[in-house]
Amino acid sequence: MFLLFQGIACHADYTQALTKSLLYYEGQRSGKLPPNGRLQRVAWRGDSGLNDGSDAGIDLVGGYYDAGDNLKLGFPMAFTVTMLSWSTIEFHGKLREKYELPNALRAIKWGTDYLIKAHPQPEVLYGQVGGVDSDHQCWQRPEDMTTSRNAFRIDDQHPGSDLAAETAAALAAASIAIGRFDRSYSSLLVTHAKQLFDFARNHPGAYQDSIPEAGEVYASSGYQYLEFLSEAGDIGGTRTTFSWDDKFVGAQVLAAMLVMKGKVHPTGKWGEYKSYAENFICSCIQKGNNNVQKTPAGLLWFLPWNNNQYVATASFVTTVYSVYMEAKKASINCPGGVAHPSDLIAFAKSQVDYILGSNPKNMSYMVGYGSNYPKQIHHRAASIVSIRKNPAPVTCEGGFDWFHKPAPNPNVLEGAIVTPDENDGFADDRNNYQLAEPTTVTNAPLVGVLAYLA
Image 1: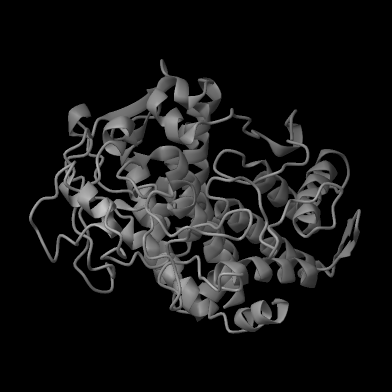
Image 2: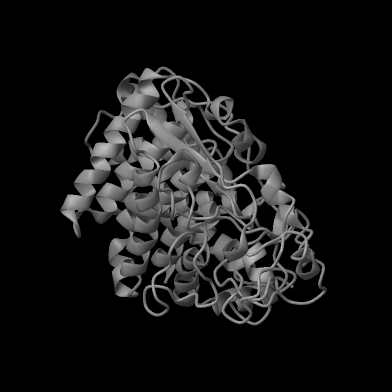
């Protein structure tokens, strides 16, 4: 069995997977789409959400639907943009080699164009479009939405430090990724990022207290923004995940890179950042004191809901860190033994290979990759006939006829990533929303890993 897995892994086409990981975002677009072709390759999608923001007298057209529903949620969208940008910053050369850099930049800009619209004043940020309950009670193509499209915001009287600061991070990271290609737009992103960071600092509060509906789907566990890394009181300790709700690992890794580059002193607080970052990496590669659980076939197992989002960020962190280690000829003294850059890459590769088919079901958990992949993912747009083929409106309740069809989705959402269970099993069933619903936050870090491996 082990040899079988290894044989499949050896044939992974990382270049194709990279292409599809970015193509996925074109299937998640909201708003007025470009003409089909180079700028809109997912031809079965159409325009949607063209009146978003009208209830508040603002243009909120654009952005991404967060998952298999038709909601636009600022918190995960911002993290998506952050990680797409970080992937592009670290691996722009690799992306260029594979002719994917323009697609990565377009994916980032589709998100930042929306986030700029959502920030019409220094202390106003719209964090949600669409009603959670009304959306989840319907099964409709985004092009046909008849559900509530109310816009929800944070402001100085209704703060949300976590949302504002994460959006600031997204725009700041995007400004670096885009800066060498469009300095004017990059400068605009920096302006918005600075205003949002000040907003987050000056008006503390959890965003779901101001936008309660958002807490139903993306509740924040709190906020601790590191204003100045060298002066932060709480630097997170050793974390168990890196995600849209817990970014400590990301900050720790960036601080550790400053240490390795010799830009800060390796002792004191900076040394602690590096130590905590490496503790997380050691636990992922199974050389730590408290290793991350794994499925029987070797996939890291963090949490039961969309586990691959955490696998993706862990793989990204180890890949990025290995590059900096290699440049400095460094290693990590893990509790379970010395870890070299090659160990980190071997780990990341094993996780990607599992996702792409090196697993007991010989199934690619990336939709559209290979011949054996999930055909009935939990995704409204993919599961209903394309508006291009049949423009007759699909009603709120009528869409459930498509939901309950025991047949493959009529549209293949290429690049969408879903998740097996903790025993390496998978039920290809639209009802399986815990495991079979893809999200934008999953692909963003994998773009970087796949760029490196391709």
